Image (cartoon, rainbow over all chains, first blue to last red; front, top):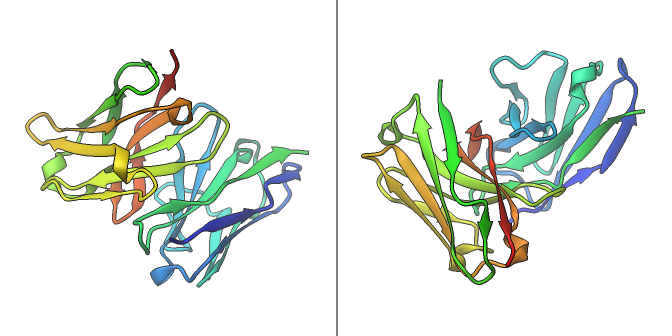
Length: 109
Length: 117
């Protein structure tokens, strides 16, 4: 089973700054089937990025994904007030179908 | 627009069975895709429980497989979850979702299930 480790656990930044979130896999993610989700308190997660680097419908271009194999990155180029949330990576290329990372909280500094 | 809505009791006693139903609107379950359940304990991360196809084909999280059953009712455009022998560790917000090859594009709002006597 693939284990996803996200770092850092918490990222303290100011609006306008660049955010870089990491997701490491215990083994190579098949076909780079790696997604990123954003979750705000009390709401369901929202799909941001799929296939490691493709933006989902309606997602602003300040969100970008990169990486391959075992190392993946979500970058938010300039943080907007609505971007402060928890972010999860998720793999869907290997058994057992899908697994999530532990999350990174992006908080206002 | 695809919409999913969970329903079920908010409180379950320890050792009993948790049962939830997800009603799908805006898309026919028989039209394709898997349909799944994901849970989130208060203040913690996301855990995939399992997914089902309209034919009844299922995938389960190995860590929960022995206690979980997911069923589909295409006539009602619904699918359901049962978790047996629940403990406090099963307290969580339970989301139903559309599973596209493991990618979760659509989520229900979630329902909090508390396990307590």
